[in-house]
Image (cartoon, rainbow, N blue to C red; front, side, top):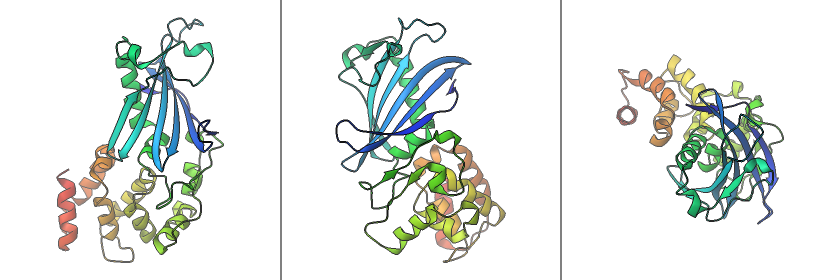
Length: 285
């Protein structure tokens, strides 16, 4: 089984094509407790659309020889959060000049290479488990209504970050909102508010906008598990409603959290018809 081997490195870099900043993620993977692969993921924004250019290094890692090393590259795009497209590069990837990258395979050679299944396994793992890559493709760490002005602040490895608010935890700082509205302003303010100071209404707003769900859903679940009808500014159970109406694909990728919410609402007596319908729809996922 694949797993991360040590901390990932996350840093800011500049695109040689457009000059814009992007996030560069580097990680190592092990399989069955042995070194297995390395990857580099460049998280770009082009024409307000997320794109990840990924290079995967495969081969032997138990000696100093790079003779069996090969690198395969691909580009991952997202029509929306539920539909990703992975296309192996037509030309050999150009990241890194070290001999450790071995032979760089273009598309024609990669699609018939015996390591292609291993490459696909690594890409699938990274897309499912690398938090920075996942958040970028799903736009979950983007300011609402503003992507071209997104500011990325990633001076340190993401996995080592500890911070009291979302900007510090994710190391992504949103610029001032445009256009200006109460909801957009409030979302920006809450990203800079310590999470342990969030009110029920704060959680309802952010979860309802599906912002930073991997961080905030566990916090919201703690609240509704203690009081399923916890109330923000609208009605009893409005935080529960925000959780129940998160997109189904996100829940499918976070089964352990879905199970917690299902256990909370299964058998719960809900008088409000709208909330009852949302609960039934969620339980049918």
